[in-house]
Amino acid sequence: MPLLLFDLDNTLLPRDAAFRAWAQDFLSERDLPPGDVEWFVTLDGGGYVPRSTVLSAVRRRYGLDISSDDLLAHYRRGINSHIHCPSRHIDALRAARAAGWTLGIVSNGGTGPQLEKIRRTGLGPLVDGWVISEEASCVKPDPLIFEIAAQRCGIAPTGDWATHTWMVGDHAPADIAGAELAGLRSVWLHHGRPWAESGYRPTLKAAGLPEAVGQVLAARNAPSPRPGIRAGGPAWRRAGAAQARTASVTAGVTAGVTAGMTAGVTAGVTALVGARSGVRSAVAAPDGPYAPVPVNVGTVGALGSGTGSAVRNRSGELAIAEEHTGTSTGAVTSSAEPSAVEPPTARHAAAGGPARTRFAVALKVEPAAAAQ
Image (cartoon, rainbow, N blue to C red; front, side, top):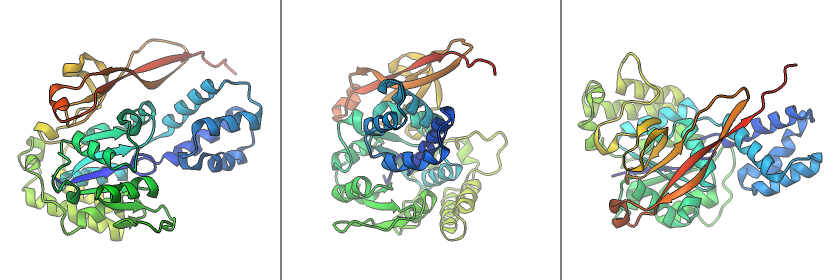
C-alpha cells in the first residue's frame, strides 16, 4: 500500500507563524516594544533552539519576575492557540487519500505539545497514523522512526515498502536525510530557501504542501485507488466510478501545481465528493480499516469511555486527550501531558509496537480580568 508521510511543524502546520503571533501577544500584554518580535523570531530558530534557552533569554532581556515553568506554560498555551491547518493543506490531504494513498505524520518533539497540535487542528481524522519522537524514543533522521510510522499506519515495513513511500518535510537534516537513510523518496519544502546540503538531496522540491502533494500524485508510479475506497461507504459510492474519481483528483492537483495550487486541489476534491448538502469539515471516509475516528468521540473501546478527543493509529492504538469541563468566570486553558502508559494490545505487541499512551488534559482556571 503506498504511503505518504508528513512532517508536522512548518509542513502540515505553519508553526513559525504561530510562534510569531505568540511573541506579538507576549509583547503587547506587557507593553513592550512591538519591534522586538524579530528578536524573538531570530532567537527561536524555527523551533530548533531548546525552549529553555529561548525562554531564559526572554526572562533576562525583560527582567521578568515569572518562573520558568509559568513562562513555558504561557508559551505552550499561546502558540497552540494560534496554530491552525490551512484549508489548502486539508484539501491536499483529502486529494491524496482519495487518490489511494495512506497518510501518516512523523514529528520530532514533545508528545504532549505535538499531540495537542494534531488534536486542535483536526488532523487526526485526516491521517491513518502518527509517531512523535518523544513517545517513540526515536528521533528523525533515525530510519527506525519511519518504520514505526509505517507500522502505525497499517503497513508492514518489510519487503519493498520503502519504494512505495514518500516523505514530505521542510527540515533537511531530519526529514530529507531521514528519508534517504530509510530508502524513501522525499519532497523538500524549501519555503524560498536554497538547498544547502552536499551529502544528500531530496527527490523533489516544492514551495509548499499543496505543490508537494501534487508532485507526488503526478509521479509515474502514483497508485491507483485502493480497494477500500472503491468499495467505500454510501457517500463515496454516490461520487461516481472509481477511475473517474482518481482521474479527476489527479488532474485537479496537477493543475494546481502549475496554475493555482489551491484552486486545482479544491477542484479535484469537489469532483470527487460531488455536490452534497451539509458537508462536514472532513470528507466522508470509506468503511472498514480506513475509516478515521471522529475528532470528538464518546466510547473509545478498549481504552474506556468518556467525552474527549482521539487520534487513531490504524495499528489499533488511540491517544486520547481526556477533557474535563467545569464552570468559571475566568479563562480556561489546557495542556496535554502523558498521564499513563498502557500495555500494547495483543495485536500490536505481536507486531512489536510500543505501549500506547493516554493523555490527560489538565485544565487550569485563571482569574477573570478586572473590568477596565
